Picture 1 (spheres, rainbow over the protein chains, first blue to last red):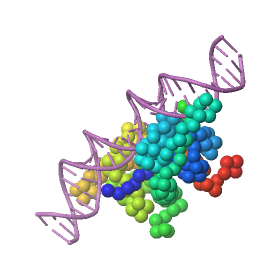
Picture 2 (cartoon, rainbow over the protein chains, first blue to last red; picture 1 turned 90 degrees about the vertical axis):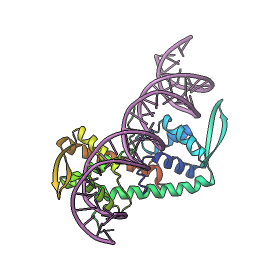
Picture 3 (cartoon, helix red, strand yellow; picture 1 turned 135 degrees about the vertical axis):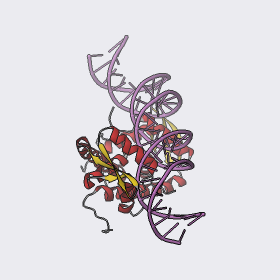
Amino acid sequence: MSNNNLIKGSLQTIILKLLEENERMYGYEITQRVKELTAGEIKITEGALYPALHKLEAEGMLTTEIQQVDNRVRKYYSLTKNGQKEVSAKMTELQSFVGNLQRILDPEWKPGLA
Amino acid sequence: MSNNNLIKGSLQTIILKLLEENERMYGYEITQRVKELTAGEIKITEGALYPALHKLEAEGMLTTEIQQVDNRVRKYYSLTKNGQKEVSAKMTELQSFVGNLQRILDPEWKPGLA
DNA sequence: ATTATATACATAAGAAAATTGGGTATATAA
DNA sequence: TTATATACCCAATTTTCTTATGTATATAAT
C-alpha cells in the first residue's frame, strides 16, 4: 500500500545522479568516481553495478554507446528523457527518506516542532 | 573485501536507537512511533519488523519480557549490554554512509574540500 | 619472462532484507 | 455485525547485494 522504500536501492539513484552531472559515463568510471568522492569509503562492486546498469537500460532510463579506447571496449551510458525525469523523482524520494531518518534518529528532534 | 553496507538495513538501526531512548518498547509501539515521528511517511510493516526483532534478539542485542495488558499480550523489548554497544556502532555507520551519500549526490560538494 | 595491477566488460550462485499476503485474537466504535 | 484498532506471528516471493568467477588488453614491477 504505502511506499516506504527506505534506501534499499540507493545505487540506482547514485548512477542516475552521476549521469545527470556528466552527460555520459562508463561503468568502470562510475566505480572510480564514487570511490574518489567518498575517499574510498564506498566501493561499488561490479556484481552490483552492471546488473543495475542493465536494469536501468531495460527500463528505458539509459541508452548505451560502445566505443573503442586503446583496444579496450567501453560502454558509455547516458540518460534518456525518461531517465532525466527519474533523477528528480529518485532524488526527492531519497532526500525525503534521509530527512525522515534524521527525525527518527536525532534525539534533539521532538515531535511537533515540524 | 570492503564493507559498504549501504543502508540495506536501516531498520535495525531504527529499532536499536528507539530502544536506546525508551528503555523498553513493544513491536506495535515501534511502528506507531515511527509513523508519528515521520508524519506517516515511513510505515514499518509487520512482515519486516517482527523478523528484525527476532533476529536482533537471537543475536543477543535485545531481551524480551511478555506482559498482559487488557487481556492482550505485549512483548516488550529492551537493549542488552551488547545491544547498547551496537547502537553506537550502527549509528556511526549510518551517519557515515549518509555523509558519503551527500558527497556523491550534492552537486555543490566538490572533491578536495574535505 | 612472468607476475601483479589496472582497466573494462560480464554472469551466476547464494545471502540478506524487504514486500505481500495470509493467520490468530481481543476490544471498541459505527 | 462490520470495520477499525490493537497485538502478535509466519511463509512465499521479490529485490538487491555479495562473492566468486570468467574474458581480455595494457603496463609496471620483479
